[in-house]
Image (tube, rainbow over all chains, first blue to last red; front, side, top):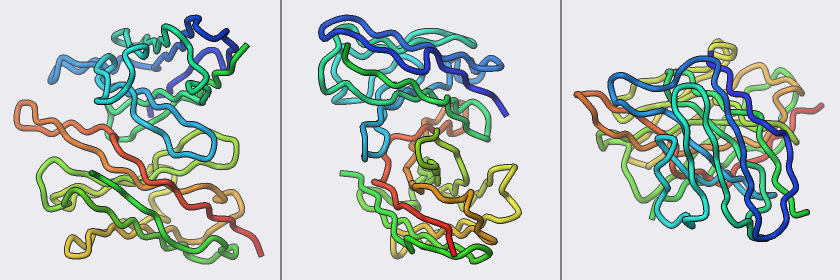
Length: 113
Length: 126
């Protein structure tokens, strides 16, 4: 199975500041068939299910604020929150859907400094 | 609007079989490019993918758990049934069902999860 490793495990960011979360896959998840990176980002607030933010590594899901953006290719990916809001406090997960056996990162907890 | 809801017992005893039902609306598992998947999350831990079933009844199970898992669909009821045998306290978790939507490229569907149910908490204890 592909191992997804996120960093850091947690971070505290001041309101209005940038938050950056990294995700590294143990092998490339760039598909030659689709020419896309098979990676999604999810936000999970306490007591709630995960919510899709980004798919294909950089495509924002409908309704997701544009302060959320995804980037990267191959094995290294980043989720950026450009101006952190109080409602962005959550755990963020990356997930690969390149192989038939999907795997998630361990999660990154984002808090307000 | 796509919604999914998990139902099943909150408490099961060790060695028992867990049966969970995912009831969904806003889409049909008869439609090409649709998939329902099960994922669990132990308390305070990360997400673990368990199983999936596609519109064409293709099924796949986690390698580490496949001997214990079964997934099936009842398209007339818009339900997916998930069973896990021989439950252990380590299986205590919140179990989520989720829809994955497929994008067609070169005659193949490539899926990603877009909508999750709220989850159901299952405790394994005697």
